Amino acid sequence: MDWGRDMTENYLVKMRGITKAFYGIKANDGVDFDLKCGEVHALLGENGAGKSTLMSVLCGLYQPDDGVIVVNGRKVVFHSPKDAIARGIGIVHQHFMLVPSLTVWENMALGSRDMEFVIDENAICERIKELSQRYGLDVDPLTPVWQLSIGEQQRVAILRMLYHEANILILDEPTSVLTPQEIENLFITIKHMKEEDYGIVFISHKLREVFEIADRITVLRRGRVVGSMKTFEATPERLAEMMVGTSGVSEVRATEEKPKSNGKPLLVAEDIVVKNDKGLIAVDGISFTLRENQILGIAGVSGNGQGELAEALSGMRKIESGRLYFTVEDVTYASARHMVDLGVKYIPSDRKGVGLVPNMNVAENVALRKYWQPPFKKGFFIDWDEVYRDSKSLVESYEILTPGVNIPVRMLSGGNLQKLILARELSGELKVVIAMHPTWGLDVKATAFVREKLLSARNDGSAVLLISEDLDELLALSDVLAVIYRGKIMGMIEGPKAENIEEIGLMMAGIPTSVGGGNVIDED
Image 1: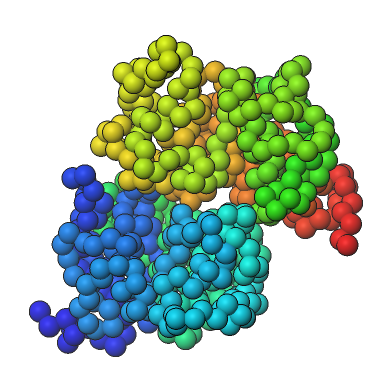
Image 2: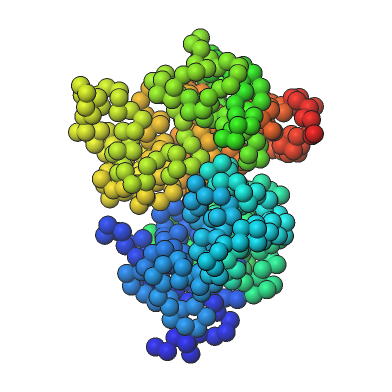
């Protein structure tokens, strides 16, 4: 076939019969997909449906086992992301492909087509500042990536794509860690790019966003295309059924019959102060009591101390001052291992960077948080037979899709990675769960699964600290909702409801309200 003549000027990309398998399992099975000039084409599907794999093939990260890719009317073969960048294809992955030890500007320079022998740092920084101001994605070019919050890393990933002047833009869950205002600004940017004939692939699980920004929608399930349509032809119910193969998944909410939240105190923080990686105060005198049969939600814009608070409570970061108690025991300076032994479990926001070791297999990752405990400890050694038995049992009970427990976890989808962390953290002795962005980037079915597990832990007598930037999630699950701003608690709301959103938004911006009480923040 003469692909050049088959293409019209209206198409930027055509992918035909794309097949890609890992360990004999087809992530993409004969997939057809295309992208036109000046359109946003949404790509939907459950975690593990093959969306990210398909786009990784398009951006040169993977080479397809079969199929053809045509860009701007020419058949192409990408041997690396550099080849794709040269064709104007840029991608922001759900798990950011950034080098933590390098600064923001150094990450921008990587893979640049016009890189010279002598790198002009000032010119690159000026370009970054220009793009930051233009698109409302403020970052400091001189800051190492490892010192940035997840939200800030998202901004860097988007800016890097814009820096390389791609005209085919792949956004994989781009709004997962953005505030409503940032999402609005991003959508303004996307609409402007459409007017300039950019082609944008928008991968998201948030159907409301898809209906707002997309022109066309394609749905994948189990590696195959199950349907493609214009957005005005779709309905949320139809898309949900196409994605999961049923009439949809019911929304998970805390029930009215939930246990009362006045149980015994389990974790008590008294005026704790915690510093960030830059040595600056990130948690500034926070106090709260986390009780049995309670979910305490923490709302706030990314970068206001949530990550440092979670790490301090789980024993992973030093508490500078104040006291932390587990029931009556002072655990202010307790190690992460001791907190695990007490039954304090931590679900981090960064699945691959903190929660799991990508190159280790499923069983080894399960063992990471329990290998020193019986029955997994056998004298001075690990009882691997017991570890593998336990891992297989958890994989089955949590419905983790994997060819086996010997598979490196980097091969699992985002939803299955999260299920693996949940399986590990919620098994064994459990008193307190510290969950940070537990449903970030998950599809509707996986999100429901995670929320059900958190509610089950609460109903069984555990205390849950839920840190999230999804207000709908916090309102659905929280018995008590606290709002954090610049490391301080602005206020707390018992039994938060949808009508509290305006007050919550004000507190997230540092403005105290009569509903939550709380601190007055000095803006100087």
